[in-house]
Length: 487
Image (tube, rainbow, N blue to C red; front, side, top):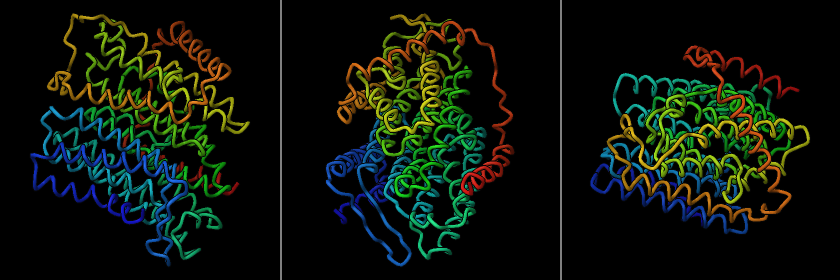
């Protein structure tokens, strides 16, 4: 399996080069690569034991591929395939597909890296690819948002690199296991880099503006897979090192509460989904042992929701409540919202149950509150008015060019169909005892939304999302992580 793995890792970058030579085959080549990754992920999941590949023994440069990796790789494959299908008839240039498939390969590389230096290279390539994809419309606003993301990301990775050097200085190895016994400064610097890349806690405040200003295909990639590239190493380290596990779980809890608190009060659909992503990443970190399954269900749901948000008549919930949307679109919106709320028959239900069973005692109350908050957030979508023939145009902005083409529906088949199929990973969740609590939580959340939050007029301040504050918050986060590591 070693040679196929190396070939699979290198293939996206080769295909990206070929797309430039054969631009007429750009969509077919990109979609083919995504399907190859999906097949590889299934093959790894069926492997009885992990695959470890030593690249440079003296430096601890290692690849580890196991079932945890397979969940994240499958998420990347399905989300990428769905986004390519969505963009099939939008006239995007070969440049878009080249960068999308390079991004796909770089994200895959983070899911198999088991050392700090390989991870650093993969994360830096991700930063460049994301910047190019955000900025490719070449408007002043798009270029600024892309540069903002790139600068924040690169500053964070500079901290990370210093931490990696300190780990090597202590153990003469870049292996994740080198975090054990390293100085608190090294662990804090590495954590800071990963928290920013993953959009965790206040380090994720770059995400709402980035997602809201990018086109929906890029938002689907960002929320569905890119931010998980920073989360995966934290999950891996938590599983490898018992002293890291409580730190990761702590950030999982505070992130889940932080993100959902902002999402409840947000009135812009794309910003709400971005804050929700921050919260849902907290669920992945709160129970590292089952984080892979939760990452899969969240990636499928959130990518679907961003793509659906792109065909709504408005991004403002106040306007959407006055303007009925097409019933077919509402059904898709409801299915995705039901899944992320934990409703049975969709894999979000099994992911919520599995996560709750792997929480520690001190996490339970906070994570239940976060789960309740999630149902309130997505009640906003579920209770939107709808009718078969809306009086107003269904589409606005850039997405109006797509006219809800067949590509959009194929993307929904991939993403929402995946939510149904993923039930097979944890079919044991379907017991009467497990079903009662999620349904009760959803009912309470809907009641709270209708009675309290639907009429809320609280507006969130956005000053803390300004560029200079994002950089300043890194210093505060570094102090916080350093203190936690020392404790």
